[in-house]
Amino acid sequence: MAGSGTQHQSAGTRGAPRLLDERSAMDRALELALRGPAYGPNPRVGCVLLAAPAATATAGDARFVLAEGWHEGAGTPHAEVAALAAARAAGHDVHGATAVVTLEPCAHTGRTGPCAEALVEAGVGRVVIAVADPNPAAAGGADRLRTAGIDVAVGLRGEQGTALLRTWLSAVDRARPFVTLKLATSLDGRVAAADGSSRWVTSDVARHHAHQFRSQVDAIAVGTGTVLVDDPSLTSRTASGELTRHQPLRVVVGVRDVPAGARLHGPGGELVHLRTHDVTEVLAALHAREVRHLLVEGGPTLAAAFLRAGAVDEVHAYVAPVLLGAGRSAVADFGAASISDAVRLVPREPVPLGPDVLIVATPAVTTPSLTTPSEEDR
Image (tube, rainbow, N blue to C red):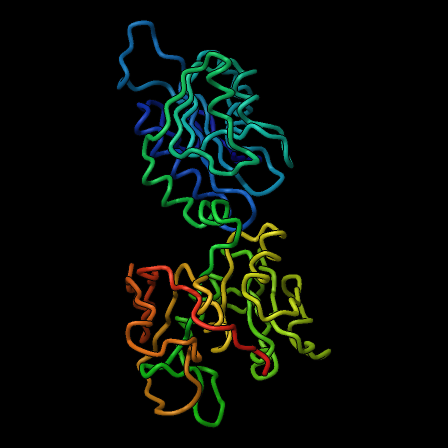
């Protein structure tokens, strides 16, 4: 699946490479995929169309790039369709061409038509795919292409393609959003001082980075306790304080009402109040809304509930060189009675952010459910 609107490129335009072999074309397709939004129900996909090989060509020969395409979001043409349209607009014959695409072309009709069928109708001769589509609703494109007599190869740059699609692949495979837990703490693990004050533990640089990350997710969740204590707006903003183009869903978890005057009722994404303490119910409700990436921001009790349920896929820990000595901890008790129950994390990358540091880490082993979920709004 993939797409592009008015920005797809044909060979020789805006610096697009003119001659590529299939491996280099896949590298280019991966670059194109990154132009699409990280948020939304659809994956980021790129496509490069190479001219039909000459009769004497070998597998590694470079060929003329007919066109390129990428997905610009739900409801836009898929990358393969966009690339085909760009090739035709440039007057190129696509019969016998090779489509190099980062994800298996879909075989179903959703917001748009099946791109596997578009490739068949266009008469392409070969399709090279990085990653097979695990989505049962969309899979089958490779089989459809083979049935039509098209040569299909799967797995070129598969590791890179999987890395690009990791949150989407996880969400589709497990039928629940990929969950990132965000923590912003002092060096001794506090999110607020003893008097309850919490603005601001981290620096402007760290907060701006956090807002940039918000603009890439589908939803942000907090508990009702955090709503009542901190009155967050849960928006994504630029460094100058303006709302970004994409605003994630604002999700409140817990049974207590959101006050009528809360900032969550102001400008920003849609407010969704899930009156439950069950993490499984939360994830199911958001999956039904096609949320692929959920950012859990607070508070300590909600963080503990997700950890207890083994539902945290990644941790973003913003750590400031500040010592408070007392105050609220970043995570409440999630049932780890001994050191053997600790959630062990594997750091992926430390990111310096002004005086602070961001540690991105993933759980070493999926944490089993330890106890009954505690209530965020008690």
